[in-house]
Image (tube, rainbow, N blue to C red):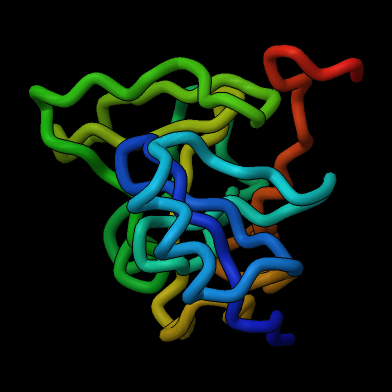
Amino acid sequence: MRLAKRFLVAPLVALAVLAPNTSLTQAKSQVQASPAAVIVGPGQILANSKGLALYTFALDKPNVSNCSGACAKFWPPLTVPASAKVPATMSGIAGKFGEIMRKDGTEQVTYDKAPLYTFLEDKDSGDLYGEGLYASGGYWWAVVVSRSAMPGSSS
C-alpha cells in the first residue's frame, strides 16, 4: 500500500503528520513560515521528520516495548537523545507524547503510551509497507492521529 507523497512537518522531536491535501513543497514552506503543525483533516498518519510513517506493535504494552534485537532491525524504534524532553502535546493533535527507556538504554518516543517505530522497507514519505503486517509475533499498525481543537476553533 502506498499513500501519496504528502505530509506536514510538525515541531515535535522529529515527528510529522502525513496529510493527504498538502504537497511536500507547501509543507516545507509552511514549516519555514510557522513552527505549528497544520492538521488538514481527521485520520492522518504520524510520521518522523523524513516523512516516514510511524507504527505501533500489537504486542507492546503501555510504555513497554516488546521489539528488540532482530525485531528492532526491521522496525527501528523512534528514539531521542537521553537529554531530550519530548513535549507532551502538540498543537492540533489529540493524544499525548512521551518517552520510555528501552532495554538497551535508549529513549523511545511514545504516542498515547504506545512505543513508536519506523519500518525498514518504507523508503519515501507516503510509504506504508508495514501497515497491517504480521511480523515478530504480532501485527503492526500505522499511527492514525485525531485532530484536536485548535485554540480559537469551535470544535
